[in-house]
Length: 315
Image (cartoon, rainbow, N blue to C red; front, side):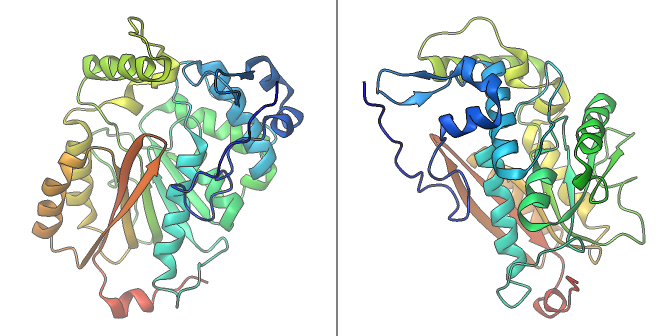
């Protein structure tokens, strides 16, 4: 049987290393355990079962070795296993955003400092941002076990030790408080906020996701496919979390060039824009993203004028 090649994923960012799909033969060389999960589907395309958390984790390990020079990466059971192409897209769009204040040139190097709100146990955004653009990161999370696992990943990959630091947020009702100190200056913040407003809603969401992937009705949620509690839900859900983030961001207007967050639900946009207007954000941008069947977007805002943006020191 002739295995068909995958066409280019043109909805991914032009610099995304995963636009041509997955070369499973090469990825298996990078991570032999992936071989156990690869099969040829009814369309004669090599693939894995994306509803199987072990398969997704093996794919991630292979991608991180092959494209991002990460030799040792793992996450505990019941923690979110992120789709790397979509996470990479967010990083590339942030790079484009920063270029607007740097004469059209993407700033690179360790002086570009990102703050990852809710870094999770996987540390994916800092890994990709550091690998592709050599940026530095501070990763925060309310979950001590997530921070511990990120610390293991960093310790196991020496190139990350001096460029990614971690801080636990000890008060779950706050986002930037306790994290941004008076002397801090962040080039950008990045966030994939909790999507659901309750454990029950999160469980339903996981079931729906698995059903969509497998084309059958799922009755048992696969928890480590769906993610850990704090990664999936918080009081107020996505909109509540982002609204809190916007109100807190007002207190640090000159300490961060761009505040950014993913927004999954289109219906939340009008409320988010109203809140940004209420806090007098100087500039707001919406960056549309699409991965596979899913559309999402990044909302970005700054309290700096064009002149202040141009004067930001990237080096």
